Image (cartoon, rainbow, N blue to C red; front, side, top):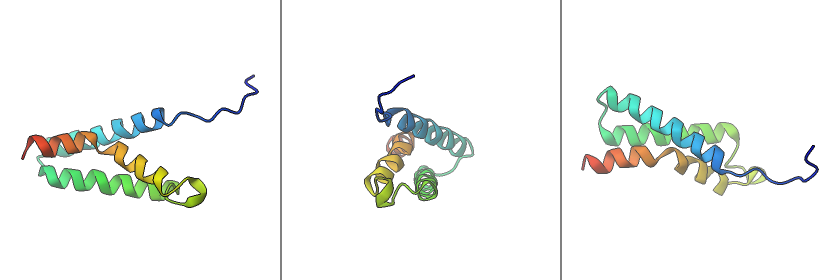
Length: 85
């Protein structure tokens, strides 16, 4: 049993957020959605998810905890927009 109360690393959560963002980006791109619309959809999904988790609340480390988690959803959508400009 681990007696040390170490905090959990955020990298696993951020990686999972990036994978989900990549999946949504791939589906929307496959459906031929415009790249900016894909970015807006992934951003909206990330914001809605973090509001649901309460990560923008000060008691949960917000607002920066929520902001960092939302940004973790976006890398693939940003790359899609940049490659189509």
